[in-house]
Length: 517
Image (cartoon, rainbow, N blue to C red; front, top):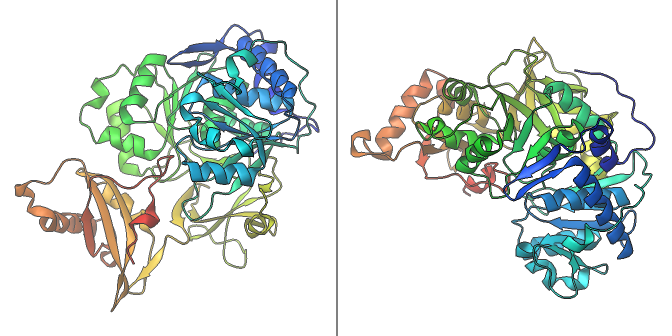
């Protein structure tokens, strides 16, 4: 889906997020609503302007990097907007990061200051030597630290006249395969992806959006904060670590209409019979899933039990949402939908377009305002993924006759077993269709004679009983079920039953941690 929006030469991400609502007379409307109360559009504008001026008084200047170390909260939004108004660059890192990762990101990002909640400020206080322009703390600043509550009370300042291509924010990957990468986005991003998300999921004036996960991830920052504000709706805040219970509790409490979560959250909810009866979810009109494959079976069960659709979409931190299902189009269960304001293609190793229905490399055109500016301090890595007019995702996918895309998995997650090319997601989706399976992850296991065998690590909805015949007996039951759904030479050779799968901070399965040498 393309609409060809022209990006102005001068854009500021904070002005773009707030001023549409303010100019439309929505200053008194709730911009954000959380467990500790809410903040209106006018209050958010005033407090972020005051924060910008107070940061400037502390010597923080346009272009300076400033680390944000908070969970989802109003303070995050005010600080982010204030720094953007100043022309400084908020640096986002998951609040669960340990001291070593905090030190790495401070050094790598060239941050000169930081903003934190008192409860999370410990590592930054220990690393004060790395913060020449100081530490600002909310909810309990110590002597010598910037007091956030004082900094939001003063007069504002003029918003920086930033260029559309000027750095606006940095986010750090979770670093599951090495050191986290610093992804730099420009101010233009909010228009490029904001328009695309508005097209895919048309908003209503009374919408309340909620994302189950931290705003340090650009997908959730967009859906829950920046795009919500730009659309003049209310963003609900889930301050605590996302869980199935907190997700549903927040939908009920804040009368959420549009929700976003990783598939893990939906699977955990579905694994508990009758959970839909414990909460008033009558406000909910649409759900969204991204981060990993949801699968057709969980979608069907969710719709049956919760009476709403889940619109699966595919995003990457270097863009954000690029492919997606939408209420404007028929849902194809298992697909991640169609392109939204990007050029997408499936290519072979020589970058030649692949025929319809065949699996190849998923790439996106680089002539797009949503594309990141690059990896901070890593031009070589940037050049690895951006070349020949394409951004190379590293994912394998196919496109069907209707233009819908189907993800086959990471190229380096696929493997050969006894000469057969194995795409784990195909087997995982088949396992998910079994009513007793909550989650599954398929990985290779080395074999002295066969190279690799297929190993399925499975989480069941209920513990095994004696009647199930133990793990061996239940593995045989799953094998028999799979033989009717996938090719027999793709049925796992090894089954392992576990209580939980290892997850990253944003809820993705840590597939590589399950691979045994």
